[in-house]
Length: 308
Image (cartoon, rainbow, N blue to C red; front, side, top):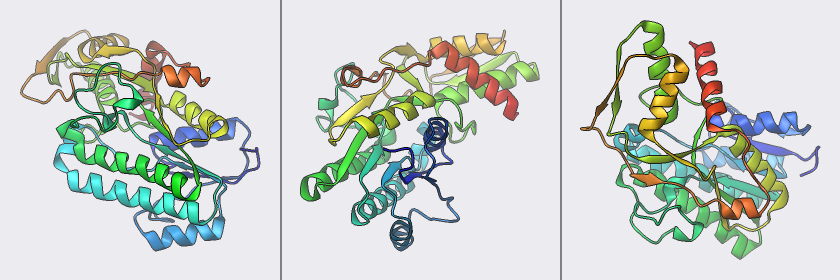
């Protein structure tokens, strides 16, 4: 990408999209294209077609998606599969049809089978059954990967497929009904500390292991690979380090100043017991994340307190 290339960031108000937009601006890119949901409904194929032909972006970051935590995925599987499929189909097809140079598709680590060998290699894709609690979302994301691959194979359309691990950080949702585990923990412990609450109850057993990546690192990776990679082979994007949810909760509680008791409700689902990405391919291709977990926790606590 040149500094004056026309670049469309789909989903620029979301956590990942806003981080990509922020990073592009900081890196000196000047011709950035965005559209709010009111300006462009990505579920509406005709409006997406008109937008692409009117603006003709050269590069497209597909960071728009219907996302949520375990409960949201369990409660609204129809919305998760339908909306994500529509967004992907509309954007990938119109990017190709309007002769964009390249598209970056951002998926998720949930695309991999529940029983994948750990750490999860890119080759594990489609080798087993998915985690039931987010199957609809995962199927949609797998379809997006295959669509990018298919348009490359049939039409020679350039696209890259990046699969970030669990993301957190600037722009994340702190709504307990839809948030992911990291931001939910930050909110619970900051609110408890501020409200003088002595006990905090968390979902599950705390035993699952997870890998976390700050969204700024994910954005940096997306821009790096857009500039340095040409093929649609799947690339895992992550820290390569895992931590038990219980340990994560303890660290966040400490950083938030919470001195009370942490309780675990094991009647609630844990999800996959372990999910860590094999990121050797990412590292070998030249990208290494910079934000440590401790720094990321401190930044996220600070940002939530500023929002409260």
